[in-house]
Image 1 (cartoon, helix red, strand yellow):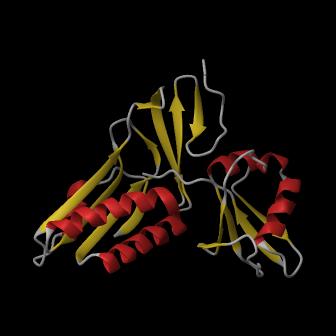
Image 2: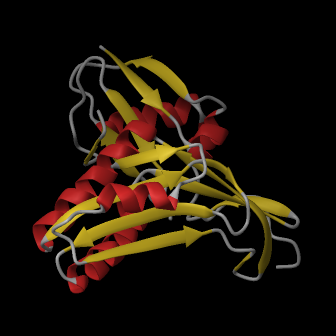
Length: 143
Length: 81
């Protein structure tokens, strides 16, 4: 399961999806939106994607992980649109016979997501907003 | 030939649109298209931005030659997670 969604992500659904009688471990990673970034007080985050390519890249990450570690099943779901502070923006679930592979693959997946998947985060903070990763945006107050 | 360009995130805001079609010369590359788009939409020139390039949902290089009806996306720095 590799997809983007405008709905809140259901952790239980992902865990059920990767559950496998061959698995001795399920690792989950939840990326959550935090209320501060580089000294700014963050009010909200808004995610935008190139959805068809984002899902294709998520599936590519899953295939790459599967080549590197002996995995049972993997699921990655990324949230789009406005996400409240503290809510999950991305959840990764991966099952494997032994725990090392599940831990390693989930770490690999989140690092790859941040490099190649066409998803963008706009941070709305007190006094402005900025697309994270670009060197532009409305000027920061008092900086 | 004609290609379809989709804009996302900061480039969508800068262009003022999410999708456009454009007639380009046969044999044009991604780099050629980008130069023409910057003339059409001067605000697309974001100082210091590092773009990636995708054609039909695959990353390609700037010298990739375009074909009729290709879907081209100039990918601003991604920030998922």
